[in-house]
Length: 120
Image (cartoon, rainbow, N blue to C red):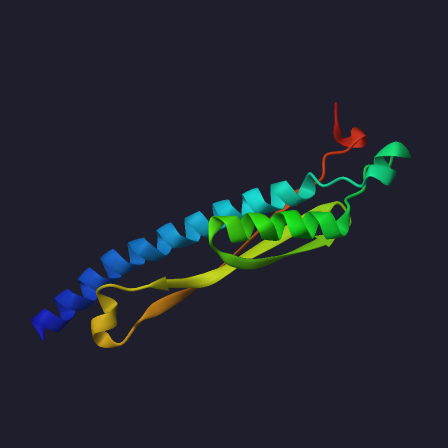
């Protein structure tokens, strides 16, 4: 019984730390992908002074960033905001002994396009 409790405790420490690291990395990746997408201003809107996001280009840039980073996820654009969600799993090392093979990861971050009205 003591060995089982020790294994569970060790698993929570080791695998819990791995989950936290995976979630932080996913959060950073989602934030950077959202920033990359938010930089995709429509050329036509810049010419007419509206600084609107080119939706298809923003989604493509954000999702390319995710692919280049080796993670899965998706992007969406609503108005001036690009939102990116990273999904995946954090595999376990210790807890797999008791049947817990992985933990889900889903982190979402957003970025807004910078426009003339937002500058001081």
